[in-house]
Length: 76
Image (tube, rainbow, N blue to C red; front, side, top):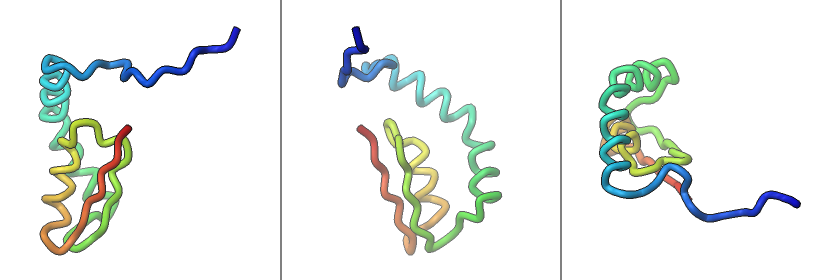
């Protein structure tokens, strides 16, 4: 009948998947900083990172907002 709901993360959570996500993050980080700038993110701001996964981008956002800013990261 209907679809069965599951709590299983479809992309996996093993070390190989974490390494894949790290590699993907490293490939896109220069573009991300450009997007952060276009969005007007800067020192002292508060940022919400929804769906943060392992937190690679969360750490980049923390660098952008600096010690006076705050980043709250939430994932399932």
